[in-house]
Image 1 (cartoon, rainbow, N blue to C red):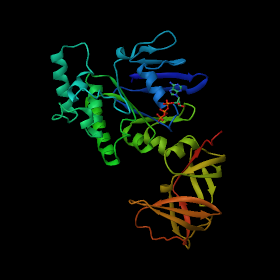
Image 2: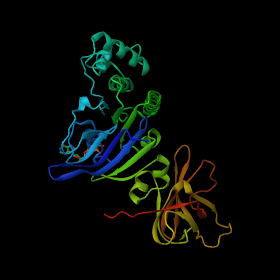
Image 3: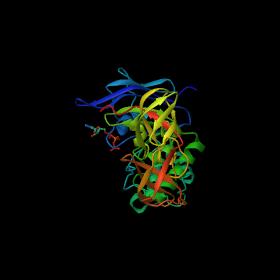
Length: 348
Ligand code: ATP
């Protein structure tokens, strides 16, 4: 399939500091893509370069095989066919909901603008709030107005810069689900920028994990980046994990928990990442040839599950269990690992 958006080797420096370095990725028609990374890693700058608000020092942006930006070309933002929802929604405070949304559509008659604004407000569930001013709306409603304004012109691509971050947790999840459903129904491709891993994992069909300094570490489906991280950085950024140095032979590692099948390395000394949910505690009188006894030194109740801290050989490991776990702090247990992934260690 031909990508809708192609970002190729984009580099951006502010003064002499590089904030985006050699970033490349593609977004396919109808696909929801996320850029995930810590604050300041260059996500917003990348989005602004795609939108045309910022110019890259090197690299190419193209959409449906049309060059939007390279060393000789800069198509202005309004001619790119791209919609943008900003973090603060950027609504006009003195325009009402309908006027804010109609503003997203230019070059058509006032009547047509009005009709389309009414239709798109129906689509986002704001049928009865046409006359309200933005400061009389809840955060979730403002978010929907911003979304309606961005999609009224039927962009092929929508750029979303942390659009859910100012909503409280309950509203954040439901708004996210509604926006996702709307994008999928309307077949609008999107690039979401977020620093929240859970948001990227649940919203996107593929995501790129960015690192401080503006580099892209790994691109993949949520499952892939979570379960098969290529680097220690990605493993750690996507959620809690246990790192273990181990020797691998024929795809099997010798660890303090016995022999474990390894993904991503066949032989040699490697760094393993084992997610807490891939570790299991078993009673220490169970038969095991190579595992060492451990002692439970901590327990955190997380509502839907527990995270235990288990000390084996003076190292601490996190183990996630469901609410039925029979073990207590102080118990002696053996750990069993269902799987491990070999990752590239941090170089800095
Ligand atoms: P956040 O999640 O906090 O918004 P981000 O990953 O989106 O962060 P950017 O906003 O792209 O990061 O910023 C990347 C770096 O570039 C930061 O160090 C920021 O201070 C710097 N930066 C951004 N815009 C400018 C500018 N116009 N001039 C100078 N430095 C800038």
